[in-house]
Length: 219
View 1 (cartoon, rainbow, N blue to C red):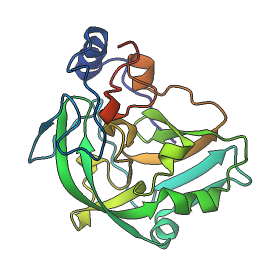
View 2 (cartoon, helix red, strand yellow):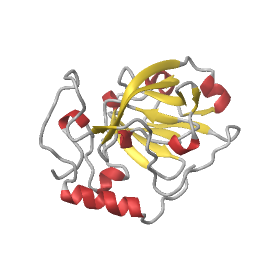
View 3 (cartoon, rainbow, N blue to C red):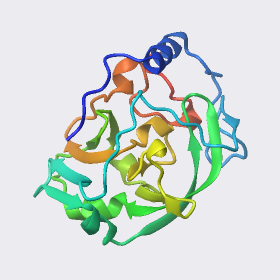
View 4 (spheres, helix red, strand yellow):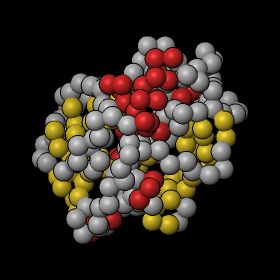
């Protein structure tokens, strides 16, 4: 389903070094209901593009989303079946671990709670591993994956999600750092243990709460 990741890249090397150095850390914790940005963040008006050196081109006629692992029955949705599901609209902020934030992003797509009803995970499932078409992986606790405003987005600001931002479909989990919102999503694996994905294996926090400044594993 997914291509292999590049062995290494300039971005990977830089972000691994930032994790070792504790770059951008302030040591402050805030509550999400407090005014302002999470600690160490600054506001941008554009939407920066960050990836691991490739942007897979996935024609809609070949796109699928697979739900597998600890589920009652594996499900694979093609684009027609996916977009026929009930559609959700959410407005939320982006907080990137590289220290930028962007307010008021309008998303359309399918709620993760709708996908849960299709997948019917077993009681032993406590987390998910997200698999992207570029080989990227990232983990989420099941309760984070099922946040009320979490969705698999196919539109941003009323337009189809651009390839550079993870189109045709990406996860959006607004209450965590944005590396958890996997681009080019191709599969959701329900798992028993919250094991690390790509960035989590390269020095980044297992959960990634921006308000608690959970940027790195060892700081």
